[in-house]
Length: 489
Image (tube, rainbow, N blue to C red; front, side):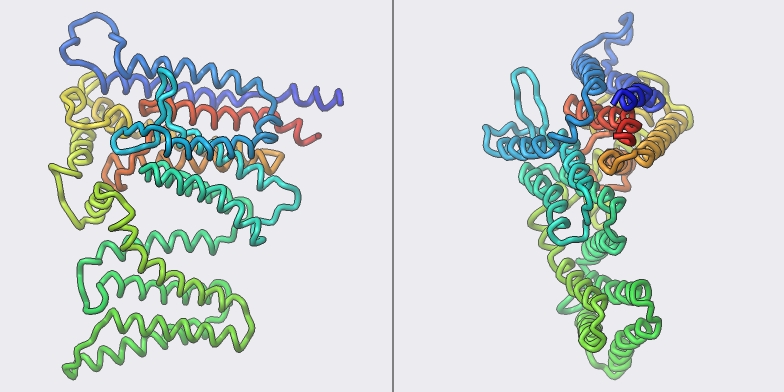
């Protein structure tokens, strides 16, 4: 036992990662200060700490205290009480729905606790990552057993559904990013492919939904054609029968060719209906192959084809009836379906103007006119990156992106060197959350992602987000520090 204790004491904090963390929160605070700086006070000496800049400084100080406390807690505490944290988190999320609502910009995900305003959905990211790590570290855990797959899915989807009810689409989508953890711990690539395919169906289905072809739209035609192509790819990848894939293409191609020939004899062709007939023929052929060869892979591909079609048909309902109107408009703008520079697109348009006006080296600290004149709403929160672009230019934004990339690679290195499944799984949970926030936040600020309202880690103003990111990072660093002891326990 003494030997084990000696080994544990040799564990060192990853000071490189801590240094990046301190760099991020320091530079982030400077940009929050810049975003709230009043031009009229330019002549005053020194900094004038008021408003969000002062509040964020207090949050930073408290976050550092939290980080210090975490580094003193035994790793076993987090592993032992992971499920307790998860249950408490679910209860708090539900209470947020029923307590007197605190409506903040249309979201009901905030609670007032004395003088503090907190967002439980932010802390739930850490809790879900911790619960997933605990489940995946169970001895001899097989993620592909139906009951296990259902369990890990529920850990992600239950809080996802509750947060959706709070009108917090952005926070809810962050939870879905945790599927990366499942993929690292044994989830087949085919399931990850289905998720990517679903995104592709949604984009093309919505993008071309306004072009009618009769019973169906151009979007329906494209999606059903993609399903057939994906089916062929799955047959080649998982069944390894090239001729079967070619025959599937022949079935679909023959039907489209026949319709094309008939169209030259003045027969009115519904190309969407033709695609549906082709897809149905391919599905029936897959079912025939399963019944003949008793190979389950054919049945799985059949379910993929049918499920893909049903998902596509439900996408329009989700788009029109589930998403909020402002979210639908932003997605349409991103896909080039609408242009509303003075309405829903105003914020992104002004953000791109601000970033572009920064040029190569930027206008200088506290010199950003777009920032100071209030053209961009939420500039110190979700749109803090445009402050960086305007005042520090291409060089500044590139350096921030470079340091974030180094940070992500460092987290990946830390996760992979863990000696326990719990540590590795939690590490990948942290990575997936940071990666999603980083990519989506920067993407929405420069106009290549829909605006879903999620902060840039350590840069955006907000106590809940800063605490949440700090807790996740330093629990991982604490686990990493103790990994040698785990190897000898």
